[in-house]
Picture 1 (spheres, rainbow, N blue to C red):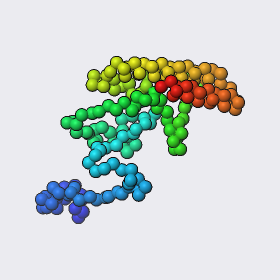
Picture 2: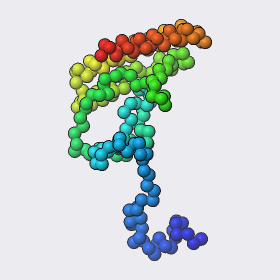
Picture 3: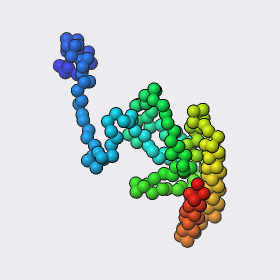
Length: 191
């Protein structure tokens, strides 16, 4: 077989000096869509990408990679640059799943599998950073506990809805939807 890309081919030994720079040239180059170019970060201002909103409202499953398959370790930040916590992730305790139309999906797991739903934790997803001493503040911990209590109340509302559920009753569905929207509106006003 006379293919230079086969393992242990003679050309690899004869022209070894040509193989040390083989990755200097791009084989493929992808360009972004024109409508995304104005929204792209400036060159050198960012390292990697991440999902701003968590992809799932669960603390049971670790979502390590973002939508492009990158993580903190594929493009690690410069260790000499300080990490600044703006606290934007602490504003809302919810991390509802989104549809393709950017609408929040509030799923009631108690209607399908109450046993598994009872085993899930209801703590706000941003509370994980409080384990790091650099991010912990008493005020943040108090906010975390307040949001956790709100989420527990919301789970109690969903349990009540699951217990009263009559499949196919559209009036009941609309009433329950209105209750959920009212609960979320009250929570938004109280913050």
